[in-house]
Length: 91
Picture (tube, helix red, strand yellow):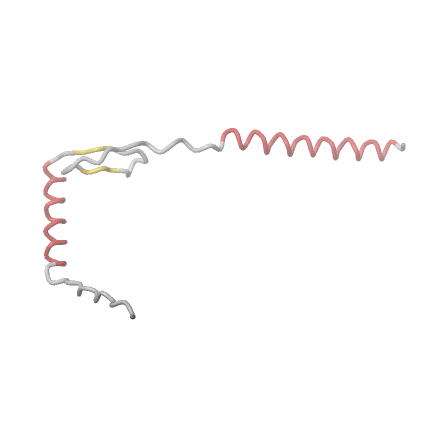
């Protein structure tokens, strides 16, 4: 085998080994952390703006929740859905 052929085989083997190593090391570090469990608590807010959940219970949060509930109630006060007619089976 010529020296040029040996060199090209060694370069190809080194490139293949480097690709396998990069792929393998990337998979080990790419696993995401499991999502944080946040229990729902009535009357409290959950803030995700920092990337992690923070449960808060302040007077400003209570006012904002009450205003939101009031706005939803006002917006849906006149909304009705008609009852569906039950189909009669064919004889």
